Image (cartoon, rainbow, N blue to C red):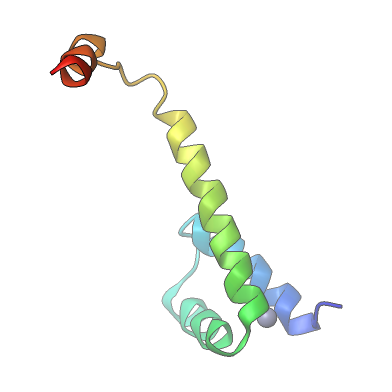
Amino acid sequence: MVALDCRFFREQIVFESYEELDAGAKTSLEAHLQRCRACEQFQVDIDEVQQALDQLTEIDRPIDIEALHRAILS
Ligand SMILES: [Zn+2]
């Protein structure tokens, strides 16, 4: 079972991943993460999701196929 303050902090972690957290809230979140491994892991998971989303939004960046081929063949 997830403790009540963990539920609160996990919400904060989500906000933080969108950079919507003010400095004070961030400090108390960091203090919680220091002593709560479950929430620390939750933050890692959120970061991975964020990164995957970032990659998706970069998909329209053109790939230089020619340079790629030269790199493979050289
Ligand atoms: Zn926690």
